[in-house]
Image (cartoon, rainbow, N blue to C red; front, top):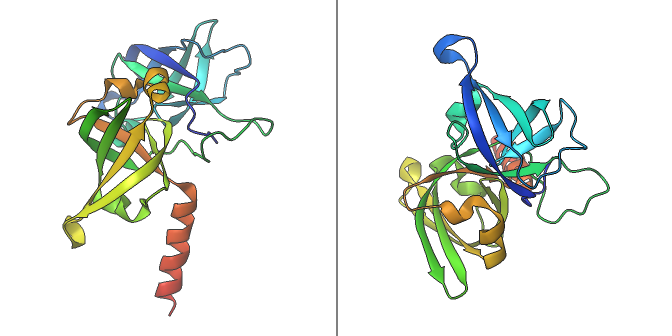
Length: 211
């Protein structure tokens, strides 16, 4: 489990294909930046741009993870030499500064607006149809591993054509401490919906089906 509070900005320094042909994944070599690795053991989990990955190798400054083809197909930003948001899995002794995050990406959103508003920035993301029902005013959402609060939700279209645009306010600290500063209109982002919303939707749908 994670909190969505980014601990450091790292950088993917190499992407090497694993054996297995076109269906194989890749091994990432990631410079941890300011993320301390002394207490990280092989097999530990680290969230990379919101995706939970397992450490398979490490040294003083870098760690390596294997990303499956399935994970690559479901995420963005894990197969290029770029900066990434990093967070180690939480322990029971830590403060929960964001919200409960699993590190399982639910879908890809598309940036529709990213503009300065006063001292802050407004970020508008279009979520796919299947995630629209999980987004709510003042609810939580994870964008590229960052726990954020939804300020506005706008549904566009209807039925299977429904898409949802949600707006987020980014304060200067969030811009400075995460890779969200690099977002541009048209770019895709990793999204994870709120864990509580996931279970509420399941309970409601099963209850309705049983009537």
